[in-house]
Image 1 (spheres, rainbow, N blue to C red):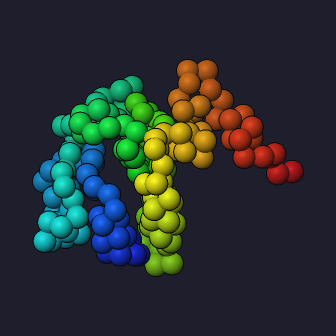
Image 2 (tube, rainbow, N blue to C red; image 1 turned 45 degrees about the vertical axis):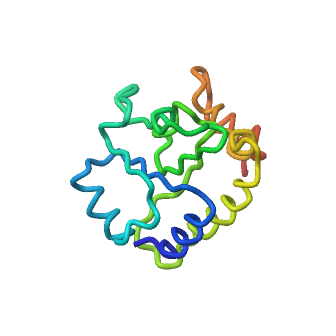
Length: 154
């Protein structure tokens, strides 16, 4: 389990609704989710692969099927393709590979605590991550990165 996961779920569930949206099958995902939330306190809903949309041979997650206001919704995912339908709602996170000093969830929690105070999360996410630019048909990821984050190191 990713470090700080229990604290993350406990604190986040106190300020936001947590809906799990995974590209995994229920038979796999439910084992993990039941381990993370054995008393069913944290996750209000679970969405699985059958709720995903297949776009360009990738499983994408269309937040419109969650039936919540997009202004209030975020999708945290380690796959950029998962958020391609609503990139302004996406928060990228690094995959976890058993690094016990991992602090991703702590940083994410701090960010989310500030994000819940905004009227429309998409404005903040768009200006913070620029993900909408990566999904433009003619986008050049390197050029977008350099324009938004600085110069290339020599």
